[in-house]
Image 1: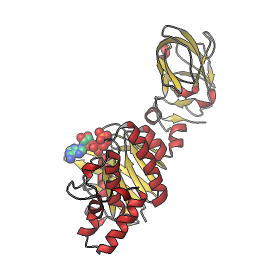
Image 2: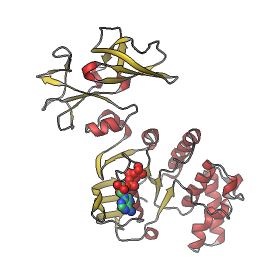
Image 3: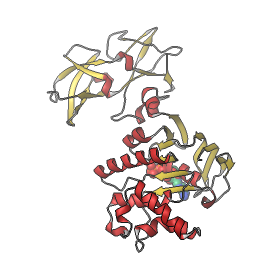
Image 4: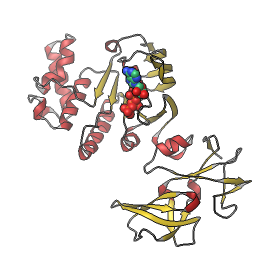
Length: 353
Ligand SMILES: Nc1ncnc2c1ncn2[C@@H]1O[C@H](COP(=O)(O)OP(=O)(O)OP(=O)(O)O)[C@@H](O)[C@H]1O
């Protein structure tokens, strides 16, 4: 079991408050990812859950047991760091079994658990090697294996893949997804990587300046961001945002005709219009909702990123799927998918129909 609950959790370092009243419920078996800009408090929040950092105010419960004042060893959680922290003089087998050995587990039980974990992680052929004879990905698997044998109620990962090269990251991401499916254990994972967050998470927690901005599935955050911050943080390249002026049921963009678009937003007048790069289509000059001049193109193989200077609207990013023959300086029309527009008020909160 590994249900985790945070209630009004605060963390102060002296006079500096870095976690500002976080409420969060993590269900047993859920894969939860913390994202947010550098310094927003992701690692601190994870360390509060682990007990490596003391909670200043509020409560942390694991399976309904209040663990707020307990040391890390009393919480039954396993932490996996980006630095693998393996013992260099020990074999993979001994590294994986070390925690159980110091806890006084019988030899036969340690051997059995190490064997089982090494199968899950495909480390069975490497059990007698020392860490220095392993690749980065294999070392990371040993570090994870060391946690698995302890059968924790939850795994806490702090940017576990950030030391690996791009290709290995993709492999390990896949391994971690499979591991979660196999173990069905609660996992909390801190990352800077959008793709890791979108592909691994059941639930993403977006943090900014020590506060939660939004919690939701990757799809919910992408399709229904609660505010401008989440809208522009989730999705890569980020959402285009333009200021707009509402007139009743319609609104217009600066420098363009009146009533360019109908808006489904109700209640408040939208002040900002957002649209993702993949929801803008290239049209002939003079056609579509606006036009502009191509500034830069980036060929990515499967798609091409276009940066188009639309005057008062700013530079809009367009993701064109497939190849396209356009050059800097060329004029293009842009057509927005009107079913994929996002509206925000002047308080930057989403306005929905
Ligand atoms: N021991 C400490 N003493 C004082 N301030 C700290 C301490 N640890 C972290 N902080 C501050 O708390 C804030 C949050 O840090 P934290 O490492 O949790 O951020 P983060 O979101 O994980 O950042 P990054 O993505 O850069 O790793 C930062 O402003 C940091 O400087």
